[in-house]
Length: 424
Image 1 (tube, helix red, strand yellow):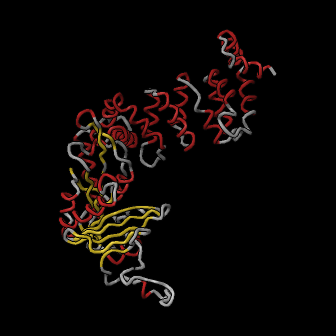
Image 2 (cartoon, rainbow, N blue to C red):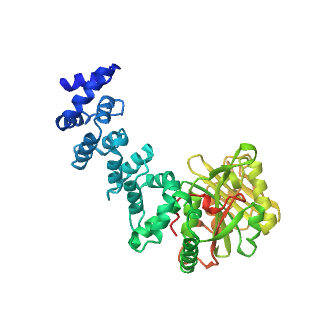
Image 3 (cartoon, rainbow, N blue to C red):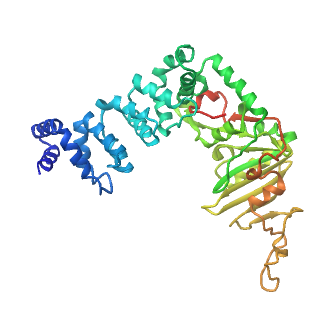
């Protein structure tokens, strides 16, 4: 009953009552906090927990420790702990840093979440970041956001760690990862950039490429390996550099960044991965809107432009949720065959030799079903196997030549502008 009265005082808006309630709750934290935590077991939302969360925030560090202890002992669920640990203020900064350094995934995520929310730049937070980014460690999702927040103030110290023989090799590598996570490769010194470039060239030699999955959705283009160089001009790609397939795939899975544009505007810039030659073809993956355009006419124009530069070009687009299934083949600047599910007409151009036509499909009853002679039966997942390369089938048996490239959709930006770690 007394706890309920104190919670009412906290919500009263009366400064004197609030101050008195905070003092009494803090004095009795050892008994009050466990009682408060027992009361959240059935909470379905943060709204149900609001009075408890307000009390815990006022109590501060003792309440933080109690929440963590109850969480570790399974007295508080993961979901409730995550909500509760999101309420504490700067007084708990060191405790958030200790949680960030915790080997447990959930604990570490909550720790970095707190440090990022509070925008705390502390020695303990930096040590936690470097430790979590050391080789072989699980990297919490929020660690990258914290690295970006810390970057300007922490870069000199991280660079010094890279050259300090007293620092362990694992922590030196963690410092490099923190630099890249916070500021991209531009954050490194010349020596470390050279190390990364040399490592990429070594990894390329015996890598078995793995390409982005199109299980639910995806898009890519394919051009002949002998003429792929034309794709860079056709799509306006810049600053290309050798890359492993692992790093290339990771790069195009990230969102484009915004950079300053003319007249105080901003523009989007993305990264593009061009694969090594795979069974005679080069595939391209990247940000759809920046490369292909937003409309159907832009899409067709892009494929035709690439084919004008490379002789041939193929385009594939899949979105299982929306029911989209598109493929097209262009030669010497003109689309010669196109399929788009649910379009009218779905099929354009003369059938290709490998196609099974709807008119010949054994499930079609010529007496009752109308099937245009030019209508095929294959969607993008089948068509790519006949036309060039199926990304899902690339593996040890694929003939690989050369190496992949990572390029940018705009000039004057540089790869170092993209924060985040790419595992090579």
